[in-house]
Image (cartoon, rainbow, N blue to C red; front, side, top):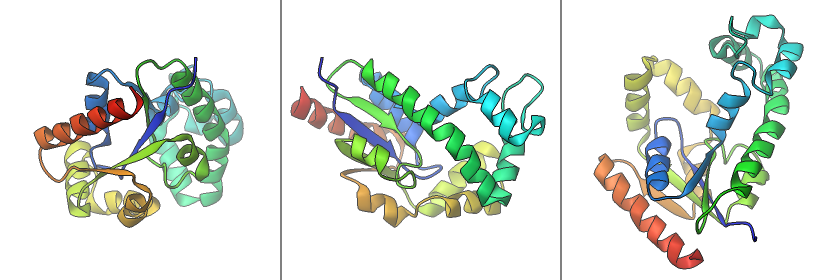
Length: 202
């Protein structure tokens, strides 16, 4: 069977990627989310944990054997070399598990959710037949993340500063979902894109 076309979905923190991906899934699209893959790899018994413990020590493992995400976040935000070290462990595993998920997808196309698609080099971009960017104003991103996570504005801004800019994401977009409104508006845009993709690849 020929591989299905892949639509890449990305957006900054708080942009609404998860809401958009959820709607695609409701429409019957197979969704492979690299964040969910990474979470599974770093859970208790996850395939990445032996290499992470070997590289960083037991201080980054929680009591149940899963990654202590807060401890790791502090480590990699303070030291770029440690961030690269973690990426070198995780990224090949994430790619391999994502490819396995895409290979077993059914339907007219599959959706690959990559929050750091722009930052991750050419691999994911080249994998995608089209790239969808979920976009909203930066002050809206900040407000959404502060509301859902309890982070301070400075903490959210620090995360945003480590990501591609809004302009950089929009520059690679084939399609844009404007999430400056409510969920009904977002959903209508996803439905329209899905209909176009089915027409193209159905």
